[in-house]
Amino acid sequence: MKNLNVLLACFLLNFVALAQSPAGKSLFIDYSQYQTDGLLRYVNCGNDNSLNPGDSLSMEAWIKVSQQSVNDNVKIFGKVGSQFNSGYLLGKEASELYAEVWNPVTRELKAGFMPPMAHWAHMVCTFAKGGKMKAYLNGVFVGESNAGSNGVAENSNDLIIGIAPWDLANFQFFGEIDNVRLWNKELSENEISYLMHRNLNGLENGLMACYEFEDNTNDLSPNQNDGTGQNMTADNYSNSNAVIADSITENLNDVRAVWLGLSTGTPTVSQLTNFGLTVSADVYGDEHLLFAHNGNIGTSVEDLPSVPSPNFIRAARTWYLQSEGLSNANLNFSLSNTADGGDALNDAYEAEQYVLLYRSNLNEEFQAIKAGNIKMSDVISFESVSIQTGYYSIAVGDEPIEDLLSISENSFFDGFIYPNPNAGVFTIKNSKPATIQIYNTLGERMMHYPETRSQIVNMQNYSKGVYFIYLISDREKLYKRILIQ
Image (cartoon, rainbow, N blue to C red; front, side, top):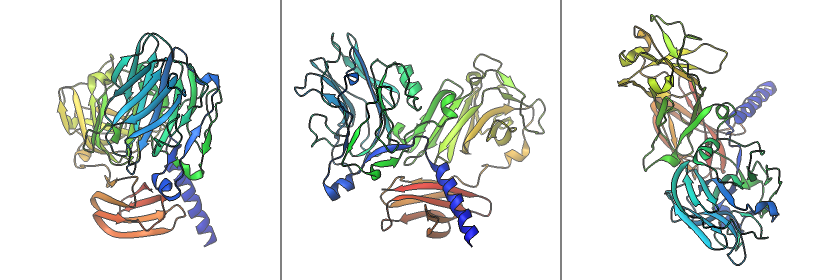
């Protein structure tokens, strides 16, 4: 029995490690915690002169405003002079990105739309002397205003994260903040798109300060303007689900993602690209999917599966898909964009002759997992693909592969769990009946439901924290993580 317990503990430790998001931890300012103790929470990063940017500035952060927050006017971070004639500020107001820069005239910019719901959003505001203030939301340019002819006026006040820097008793941010970055240069749209889903090494050109909140408030930049937390404990560092690439994805080309922050009011989120692959999926809670490619062009016959189709050939470009809770998506390949100037796969075949390939690592051959569903011009669509993290490509041969055509889905599971995170009440849905078991991080089973396609779960009487949901059939087992806040 002792050995069994040791094995279970080891399994859970390994599983928890695998479940950790590449985003690591975030700064978590909990509204319910404030309601209980009445204490305001923020980070003071000091007033070193290296925090005065000069002629150019970029302010950047991932944020997730709590649904419990009663205020749609929150300050994320800033360094503001006592007379409101120097410094800078980034915030959210009336569902828009809000920023101010003083030089010493107040330069204000409000732009973009951020729905008043709890989902991750990436915010950037840039400033350039003699040029413009520009706003970017989730990597997209959303507005600009005149920056004036002077640089950012200096001050000796502190850089504050999480509350109004000029008034440490008002405009408290509630929710999660991650990857706060300050730059003493104007980031371009291409730089923002490149950096937003990647972690930094701290040595990037122009990086003035960088806070990733990995159980601390350390500054990763060479300036080492480490912060001091006010009224903060270990509970103020949360497992982050910000849309950040893992170590494989971030080293590939053209990192893109689908997550709820891109939604326009429905759970269906689409990410269109010019690099060969576009993705659409129903996204709930903190589920997200990142994808990037190896940059290859043309076609290849390397690592092909053994299939009974003459002249079988694949695209040389492969895509790494990193799934963070997202189990199902539509994958659409443009043959010409995938070829990227090289030889393209023949676009004269029927949809079912094109095959989706998958492998979990680069040391194995591809598997043929699904036939094409729809063909429009040179775009081949694979619908309702059960997503596993790994490498994907597209191939085609002279004949369809019959044993694939008989399978409508290559996995039993396409389950959704939403909302996630939640306050203790959530819904589990799967296209086919599955047994549901819910465990805590100690391996103790909390709840059990017999085979069902849909189940509303109420865990309001359980402790807040991470739980693991197991969907089990006689064919497969799927693990999902939920967070009760």
